[in-house]
Image (tube, rainbow, N blue to C red; front, top):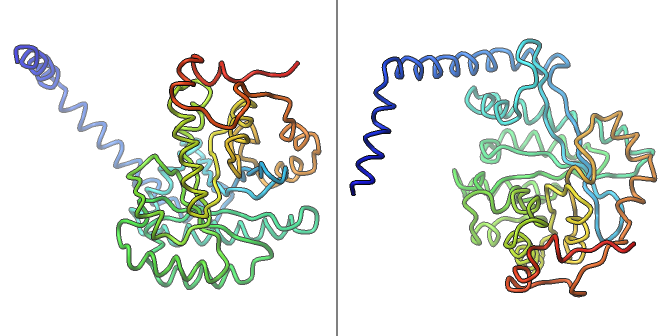
Length: 323
């Protein structure tokens, strides 16, 4: 108890320092001003070239080809610089502009997909959708109409939390999207309030394992076990699995033997503007690099127990490259 009293006393002293409240009030005031500025300028930015899309390729580990791309939002503000994507979405949701923003993203993605069709076939374009939009019938009406005119397949990526606010309305609209041909992907699985109930209820085709677990696969004792068990669970439920945050050849090799379906991350490619995406897709050397399987696993089977991983000193020591 004495320890806690001492800690509380010192912490209380920090809070009570002269000027501390003023500093905090100033910080909050600047934050409010920043939000108001973004809210006011979002419509103008959408009408200009400040807000734009980039695309991150997704690699099919089984077929050895590109499966599609994830559509990602960018805002290069003239005075603030690059605005964080989370801030853009928060701003749009707080100001009631999220439906307009989401439809703008969807429309631009459909146009860009059409421009790639002749040379690269039908790549599926995946778009992130806010939970607010999922429960909004007019948004779903408009989205379905736009998708009906798309030249290729469209996917929507939704988070587990998007389903929580209004489950009946969200579920009904998700089923409408599926009927319209949309492939649904559960994004960032494992990073939020994950629940097996959502996997049971959502009409999803795909589950994306959060990069928090994937990026640590070759340096952690537990992450590869979590990833492997998630892959097995998803496959048992009939879902494809996408691993986000693939940043090394070793991670890609490990996912391949674990039976993961799709890989996404900087080792595959960073997110690219459309022109650079076209150059990337046209370069056969990228596919050759990604299909290089000249890396072996010890022991020579596609799984490990926790005891095996820990006895080897981590997955990084289990992986070895053939010379």
